[in-house]
Length: 329
Image (cartoon, rainbow, N blue to C red):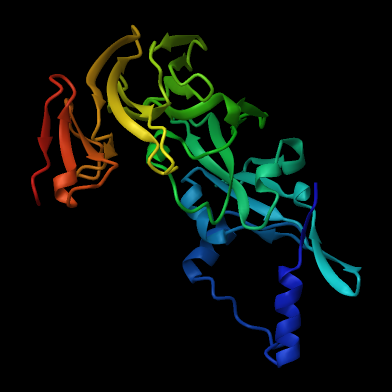
């Protein structure tokens, strides 16, 4: 699949015609820290290819592996006297290199369904590096993202198809298709993977990543969307949010209320701790930069945002269901 763009040609033509072009060689503006890190980590593309969004490379990588995406050179074609720029983004590739340079894995983008990132400024981005070092879960993403969102946006993961690569063998595979899920989350210890279905939002799946067994839970309600999973640090509980549809002409005001549940994955016990609250609560980061104040309390806010900033924030005790206004700092 190929993408045609006239942007590069137009900019080039403007610079030449106005005398703004400069043929002098400039010193790269990359900081020494990045340059040294890139060199040490062997971050480089094959001849003619360019790094996608190099500023994100170190942020996406970890202390054991470096991940980056390389895009092919553009080729020019002439059509009706106008030179167009053509880029075959199927030739893109993503490399994952061990920091000691002992292993290199290459993902060819034409080996998977890459249409979502068939455009400039796109790459494969890590979603989860497993703690045992065996797997990397990743997904295709492009920049900038869309603008504007409905109230229910917090219930959706915001990522497309989820892939994984075995860092021991290099095996690359599709893990979960975008059409299958609304939101996803790994437990902190990597033992459990939870996701809600996109087409059947009343269904929750919990997969034990050690035994490969998957259990399903039917919430049994007329639900619009389910997501915003918040695991506790011990991986013994996961809080999640359920949204109910508001059929309004205003597409952004798509929720009528929200409920909040807590699930124990070991025995699939579920408890409703807040039912169909019209304030439409979503998870919020607490003053300690975590979702949890303590083992029994999370922070939430109303997506309606009808109140002032601090009046809109609450703590929720997941044991008692008690809501309290967030104290001002």
